[in-house]
Image 1 (cartoon, rainbow, N blue to C red):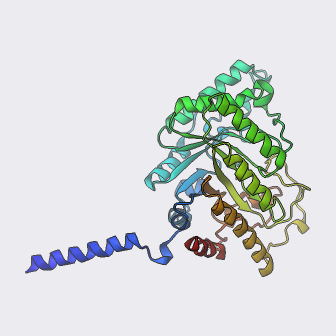
Image 2 (spheres, helix red, strand yellow):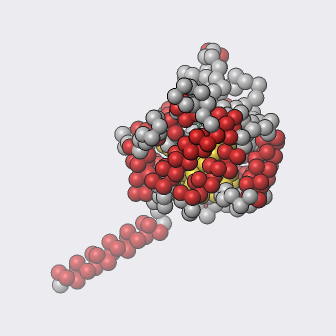
Image 3 (tube, protein in one colour):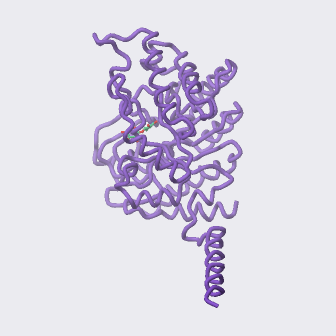
Length: 376
Ligand code: XIL
């Protein structure tokens, strides 16, 4: 008799739990669930999230996102601050978190002129190193990092920001010493270290026509040389008046036509005025603080908030329309309180670029997106 009761109890509890998995209660549905079949939804993680200190953020990340990227701790100045001395303490924790939660893990970034350690480009006298030495250093850096996470990190931002808005090559140290071939070399080294990893070129202002054309030409040229390049990452550091949705869409289409996957890699929408005549995410391009450039210290007026939300939704409509080409949309952070936009391009402002407010509450845009995807 008791056995029958026990069997019945087990049967019903199994039924209940299987039901809960197949149809999650509405409050548990995350952005990643609602966009399943369209693209991955990612977020960039900061150090207090990676170390587990910010547990509220961790829970939100697990609920809403199925892809992660480290906002800073996999950049070369952190991973190899001194030649030959690699520090994987934080990146190991980051990758473990992604694995534990079965997320698509992105490595950001292998070759970038910013946040690179000074020693990378100079000899003991402070003179630029020869092309051979720089190639050796690039190879060692890329292959040490990529092989450590072989089969664990699924995609790498191999080269970040090599092209200027006017379509010319950025005159970085990599370019000055090795010429444009540094890009091909970086992809080849990464591919050797993990032949199964996805490999990306990532850049900002990708909606600018000359830049778009230059990126398409570069990707086609690499492909023609037999170099593996899986995807093109469009950093989405958007402003209220730049770029236009139309120009952004043209780039998605043009990048998709190369056969590469397209991804929106660093999405945030600043609500603050831009101090420059044109937008930029060049992190060396900053301006001084002025009170009038920080208008929403105590909150955003309702009509401005709606304008912000509608602009975000307009971009998402485009992303949904091109979900056949877009494999991932990654937000550059979780809450407004932690966004880099509070300090870029002007330090000390109060910006509102992300989906969660300063108290970790989802903004209405999250609900709107959940509703919108149900209709799609
Ligand atoms: C930013 C980080 O968000 C900041 O915390 C850091 O101080 C500077 O870099 N393009 C990129 C990102 O590829 O790595 C940059 O991240 C933003 C612009």
